[in-house]
Image (cartoon, rainbow, N blue to C red):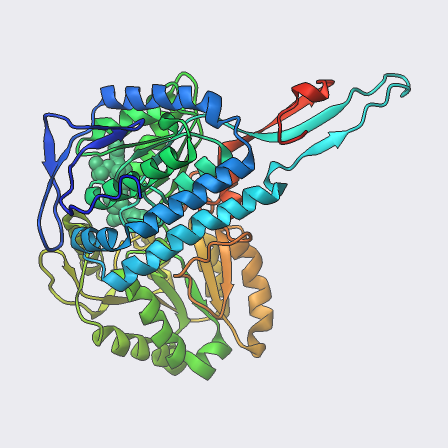
Length: 509
Ligand code: NAP
């Protein structure tokens, strides 16, 4: 395979439109274990170079047909697979995630590429509409109108810390952009630069094999904040895909809005993913749900955007069964390694926020050091929760807050108070139908995905998936960052009025 080098030492360069570029200044990776390496620090000059190359590439890549792009996406998947062991080796070292998780994520990443290839081959994503000409219509004739979705131009993508493959260099945002016909400039996450480097190498190889313009993909490693800031403000960038913190996402969103030409910023930010255990479900299987919740809460050390951080359950023995089972399961889950030192210390700061409140009872806490994080469990009342906005802020990690209610109406009051969420879950049995019917319309206004009798971690990459939601879950409630619908973020409708057939985009012809 072209470019599939066997030396496992990263070269630490950026990939700018087909060229590996080194810089004089470097940052050193901070792996969870194994060797640290030096990586070139990005700069606004490199951002400019990548964006100009992306714009130039758009004049060719933006006019390729869906079949050409589908083959390109499938070739990227093949090239990633060819580098599988190297990716797993450096990925586990950089992130501390176990090999099985990274292998699974690699499968998700290549399946995602192939799913998008299939999706654009089908063509219905173009949403082609045609109003025939009515020259005899009175009082005015109607012109012939065609509408089709067209790619928007170069886009910027910020790799996510918690999905070094499925949401990074060749992850969901990149795939959606390339599938749409948009060149992509990725700002690599500084938590896994070596993983991004190998994935960029795979994309580079696919570009060469498929004769795609080199500017269709660039990777700029981070190291300094001015890279991301220059990228979202570059006049040739037409949209941004981002997964990360509320603070970082909001800062970049504001920069996009302040540009002379504002552009959409598709940020997938924070969420506590509330879970409501209705009374009959709590009575019949509270312990079972509690155990399942603990499993979902600690999956991947709780570092999932869909982590169900808040559970709402009744007071009394039925609720106790849920809480006790959750506590028991969390106690038996040992400490896990967090993705970065910064995320581990943010987790500890989140725990301190809970510890400092009199109205919050700690049910399970422990002292952690370094990158290690043990599960934590807290409990409060509906009344206390409603009075303290900070209790609804996401703690990224394996921390659960149980809100105990005194009456069914507390659930509706709480549901109305939640901010926008990626997901909301109801656990219900037959006798809970009336309450569920009252709760669901409220939750539908709050979340992008509603679940019944399940747990929100494990997001299916599929046609009907919505991974988004009202702010602050995302910065754009009309969009999803997972699933085939995510391609719509990087397309815009264009109407062709009386344009002769020979001049119409090839997708229509
Ligand atoms: P982050 O700190 O927001 O960083 C994400 C990306 O944005 C990184 O590439 C970062 O650059 C860049 N960035 C952040 N703030 C910036 C700014 N002001 N200007 C320019 N670039 C900026 O998120 P993270 O490192 O992935 O994780 C930290 C927190 O994000 C977690 O504690 C969690 O709360 C949240 N998170 C949420 C999700 C989700 O799916 N909702 C997923 C992962 C993380 P650098 O590489 O230089 O830092």
